[in-house]
Image (cartoon, rainbow, N blue to C red; front, side, top):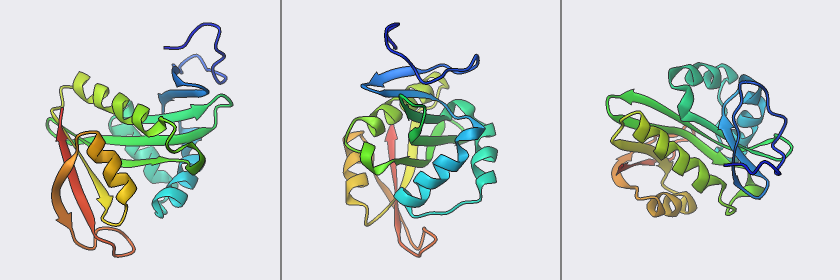
Length: 168
């Protein structure tokens, strides 16, 4: 929760910000976030998606699409979660701007997503990660994820992935 003395980034009437650290706020996704999210995705995940994908996925479960913004309102990280299988949430995309890593942004996004999954009645969360991304795998292990499957040639560049899962 935000202290009344802490200034939040220019809120609009329909935006609710939650302060989660020094100069860091979480809120739901807005369509205007797409260019910045696409930039973070390209840099952090080495993936390039059509911008319309971010918008179409936001309609499925809006509460599963969370962004982290700094005091200026600039998106510094995001988690795009979907619910495609009954009782299961899936982290479809998750990335944090390089300068904001190891500062609690990813943890705040993941914890908030878990809480929203519980409210929705979901019992399991899955995600995919590149086999070569040791830092991400360690991060997910700290959040209770375990390896569920090897996904051969899963990524657009041919790299294998792991499917990871955890129960809530």
